[in-house]
Length: 447
Image 1 (tube, helix red, strand yellow):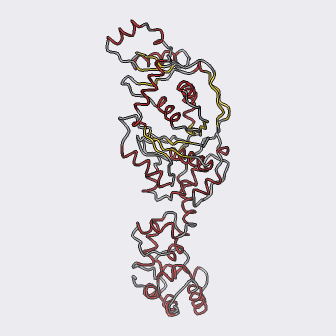
Image 2 (cartoon, helix red, strand yellow):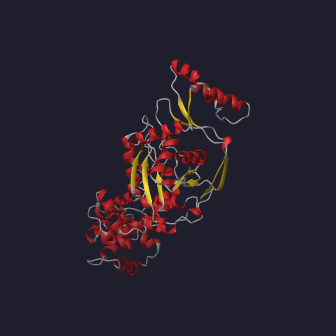
Image 3 (tube, helix red, strand yellow):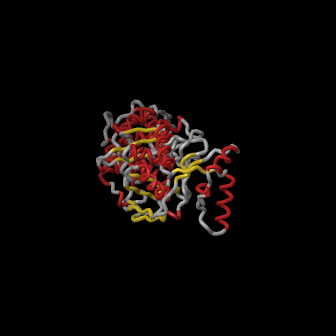
């Protein structure tokens, strides 16, 4: 059977790096196996699901290059969930419960105070037909729970290894709310079964859900997929990430921080694995290196500073063709490969190229603090055309004429030509600045 995985976010907020890490791992797993990747929007929470968040999910995945082979939306499948619910009710696995939220909270609090696990006591199973009729006459509408079998639940997790739960230690989950809407625990299983998902790769916060859902798979007649539960990503301080809080959202990393997609992918693909984190320029490279067996059970931390360092390393490797569109979006339509290769070693974000474009193509107020020396240097400027050898030829002549060398030679020239104490190699910048502009700057003129 062909491998089939899914990324199933709820469109209730912005995707953060923890969400996208799961999407990336699923995508890499599918591509490595030659399988397919399903994007499924789990949007049955109608109060919190928003079209703009759904659009944002697709935009974020597309930006990262995580194309999907299939697409599904849970809100299109209510009829199917109803069919399954009817069948589960008929088989006795789905039973009505009438407790109010307040009553359930009291039960939980009582059990916890006694040091006992807050497992539902199945009181609803002891109700007679007359009891149920009386409660409904009082205006109560039931929610519906799945009756778990009190037998062991076991599976071999691709990350955690052998996992064992005692069915009796699990609480019968609510699958249908009082208003008739199905909950995630049911819809996710029905979707995975109907859409032939072979591997479910998700966060370790779902381990207990998996124990419950395996029994639901069996009850609905679906093939139980292989499971892998990844440790949840935290921020650099060890705090959990949240869509609602916008923690480290992909949108902010892209739009505000200027992060390259392959910088984020290179980092997230390796966090929490035994592989070293190195810059990669294509997703195909990450696919070739991927092995879910390398994922550790230790909690990985996402450090924005590490991402920024990796972003810089990737920019230093990217050819002009890969950034031409970004440079044009910055208004640098005339930027060419010579400009990019000159400035990229000094960039941590593409947006910083604007500063060096200004240095090479716009008026600069020079720091002409040694005018006599600069005048001598200006008199020795070679005629154009200039190339990468011009700087060495010129400074060699200046050194011979003035006797200066090292910092005393180079720093005044840099400050006059760029207005700065540091930056890209001047052998690369000088041909971009040009002879006319260089002469004026050496004379202390803004040019």
